[in-house]
Amino acid sequence: MIDLIKNKKGYSILEVVVSLAIIAIMMVMLTNVMVISLTVSAKTSARANAREEVSNILANMKRDIRNAEVIKSCSGDNDSAICEGILSISGAFTWGLCTENDGTKIVCKKDRNGVIIESTPSHINIDTLSFDVGFDETPDRRTIIVTIIASNESAKLNVKNVIQQTSISTRNYSGLN
Image 1 (tube, rainbow, N blue to C red):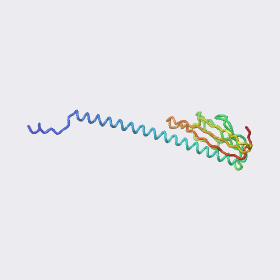
Image 2: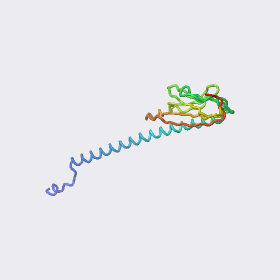
Image 3: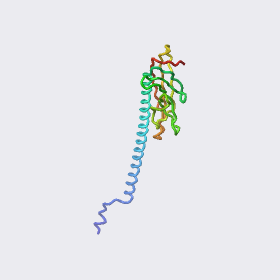
Image 4: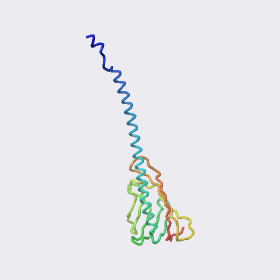
């Protein structure tokens, strides 16, 4: 019996509690790092998605404006922003700002009947759309500057101020400022 008392090879309850407390603190710290990492990743993904969608719509605008036989006008900001032209294959087009049923603003292209044939997705909210005409000296050759400021509403991560701007050289601008 004396041998049993001398041979204490177990842990005391205090050592076990301290070890568990240290492990719990480390797990909380690791969990916080993971949550922050996932939040940053989701925000980065939402911003990249908004940039890609705005780039796609700007590329399509640029294609239509450059290929237009006649550009009637391209001017205005936000609700008054409009760019009208005529394509030889598909006819008249109008680029502008449209409002969805839920109040989200999107960039849309309408045909001559006012039917939307192309637009940004509804999870990309357009905060600003503007068309500005450059100061070229030749009346039928103008540079059109298109600016879009967007935000990604679907992620609920406060992704705002995705700004893209492009200039489009034209050779068939009939509208005069």
